[in-house]
Image 1: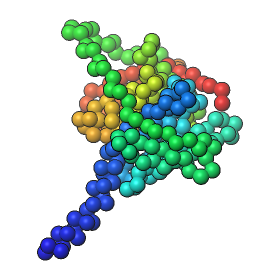
Image 2: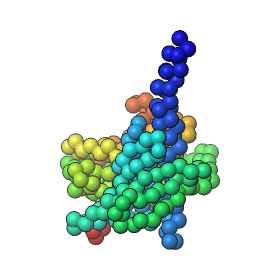
Image 3: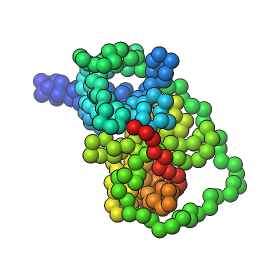
Image 4: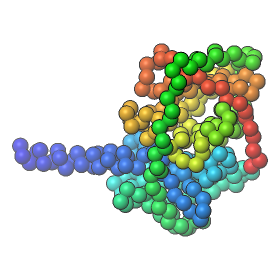
Length: 264
C-alpha cells in the first residue's frame, strides 16, 4: 500500500508542476529594451501558450502574436510579426523563470539574438467609484441596419472613448484566422487584453477578450469577456458578458468607431 501511494505521488508531480508553472507564467510582462517598453501578454491553456507582443502598442503595425508550449523547463514559443506585403518575421524564444522574472533567450539563427528579462508591471491605482445618483447611459440607437460581415470589414483599428483612457481595439489577419489586442492606455499590460476566438455569421461577430491576470482574474481565475457585435455605418456595437457569468446576464455595451486602416 505504501509503495502504491508513493507511486501515485510521483505520477502526480508533473501535472502539479505544470499547473504551478502556468500560474506563474500567465498574464502580463514588461521589459525595457533600448529605451522602448516591450509588453508581453501570455495566455496559458493546459500546455499551450498563446498571446501577444508589442512595442508602442497603440500602433497595429507593432503587434506580434505568440504561439508555443510550456513544460517543466518553462515556455517555448515563437513570435510572429506580419509587416504586410508578404514580409513576415518569426522569432523563436525559450523562457525561464528566475526570481519572479521571466528571462527570454532567443533560439539559434534569431535575427535579434538578445536576452530579454521581463518583470511584472506595477499595479495601477484603483479606479474611482461611480458617483452616487449618476445618470445611467442612454440606450444605444444604431445609425442603420446591421450590415453583413466579412473579415475584411472588421480588420484594422477601432476606437472607443476619448482622451488618455481611449480604448484601441486592433484586429489583424494571421494566416487564416483573426487575432488582436485591446489596450488603453497602451503602455502597460494592466490595461491590455488579447482578442481571439473570432467567428463571423451573417451580420453577427463574436470574439473573446481574454483576461489572464487582470479584470477580475484574481477573483474568478483566467476568463474571457465574450463579445457579440454588429456593424452599422462604421459603428461596431458590442454586447459583452464575462464567461463566468450566466448567459442571461445584463451585458456591458460599447460602441467602437472605425476601422482606421494603416499602411503595411
